Length: 119
Image 1 (tube, rainbow, N blue to C red):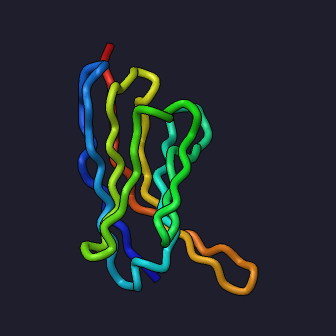
Image 2 (cartoon, rainbow, N blue to C red):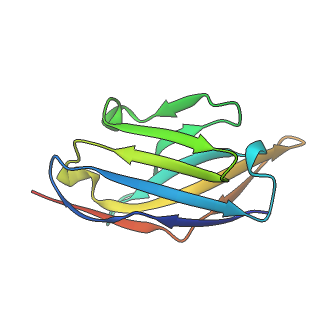
């Protein structure tokens, strides 16, 4: 199993930047696919960006060109650099670690960090 702790959220004006960090412990970090999800009030949780154990990334269309996910396996940490933030990016952001075994996916979640973008 893996434990995840997010940090870096806060209040920022539109057009500003934030960097979220997610520190992992308890298991072999490098084997996990990592992702950032977000959930705004009244909406479903959605994938923002993901990065595989070998560094392949994907991101939601709504954040392409603005958000960048990266990982540092030596520090057991995944990052989400968020630039050109918009009010619609306001949400609780959750770190996710996923591993796959025998056809099953196992998910682990952090506690979430609030990002608020003011207009």
